[in-house]
Image (cartoon, rainbow, N blue to C red; front, side):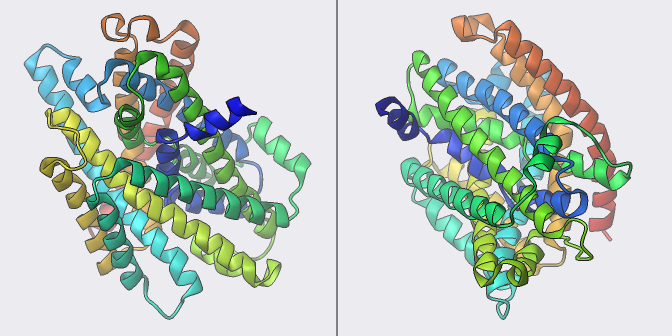
Length: 414
């Protein structure tokens, strides 16, 4: 029992990652998946969880052993100045575009949760207010305080989404079939949902966040085992939360005439089915998802860009603060304007990040196979085989996401 207690005490950086990927994008995509296709696409969420666990464990190990963030590792991977320049440009542009879009979706998603229980107050008011609270949290410059807040929000999400899923009395047999028998309904929308479930869970900026965050908690290479356990527990919990949302939407709405297009709508629609508490529970979960990600996304951007550009990675450093303030400011501004729906912004962010994911993953693969830097902690054969398989899948996703990205850029510019 003492070992188990000790393991849970060590949870921290992994929970930051879980808090970051369980954002409004995940909640919305999981909601649409369950309401539209029942339990059928649970296997995609299971794959996403395993893929995230694989990449995040590699990223955490890189940070603990090499004492470098992923941005620094990419910058130092090349001796050729031209290759190094393009690597830095890739990281900076990817983080800027992806995190700016995600931050807007995070703030708007959190506001959607609040609006579903306080409908008289506009999301354009809730959004900036959430952004200001996130600013105060990040401005404190205390990693431990931020970690505690995000761990608390993950626990809140776990309780709210699990309880809601159980109360809907789901079909356990159908859940098992959906998890372990991969099938995709013969529609383009189903394939786009699969892409969305994977693209919103395996998020590139979390790789940068994790490699840097573990250095705040652990300082010795042998502590890579503790970081691995933290990753396994946190990502597994995050995967279960996402699956619970799919289960809830499936049990409550699949096969009915009710069309659910976003998580905020589901929070309201659950009330007549499960009672007034259901709306509050789901809305609190959605708010927690948006707010936790609204803190994690700017933090990840600051870690990534500081590492790539060779700046000091300190939450109190002015350059570090400028990066997260810029990303947060974009999110606050666009949420205040409210010209696009949260769904459009979330889809845009998912597509943009899925395009860059294979490139970042390939860089991570080579960094973890660098014998000089990683020594005995470099990837073993099993990890390499698994990571290559996941990279190949992400390349296929990237192709589909590129088409979606082009479509969304065109629509957002109209």
